[in-house]
Image (tube, rainbow, N blue to C red):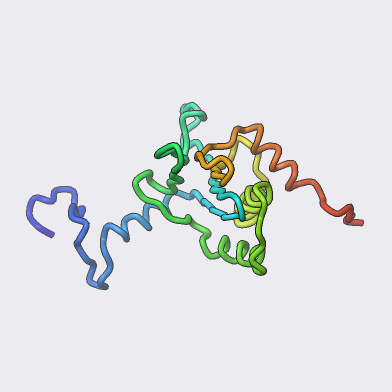
Length: 173
C-alpha cells in the first residue's frame, strides 16, 4: 500500500491481490455477501423479470424510501444487491442456479406471467420463505412494452396469489 492511503483501502481499481485477483472485485463480492439480500433474474420468451428482497434496515426508515431497483433510462433498469455500489446474485447463488436449471431444463418459453412467477418462486424456494407483497421488489421489461418498470404491491400480490393457488385440480389428500 502506498503512503497516504489513510483508511487502509486500495483507491485504484487496478490493484491486484497476491492471488492475482482485483481487490475492487473482491470488495464488491464481500459487500454483496454481507448485505444478506438475495436477488434473482429470469428471462422469458417475451419478458425479463428481476426480483429481490425488500428489507428495511431500521424501523425508523420509511419503507417506501428503501429500494434496490433503479430506473437508469426509460428502457433500462438496475437491480443492486449489497451495498448500492456493488452488484451480484447474492448469498444463495448456487441454490438459485439449481432451482432455475430444474425449472428451465427443457428451455421453456415462459410467458410474462410465468417469467414473473418463476422468479418469485425461485426467491421463495431459495430463502424458504413465503413473502408478502411488500417484502419483495419486482422489476420487469416486456417486448410489447419495452420500458423498465417496477411492479406495484397489488401486481406482486396477484402473482403471489397465483403461485400459491394449486394448479391442475390436484389435491394433497
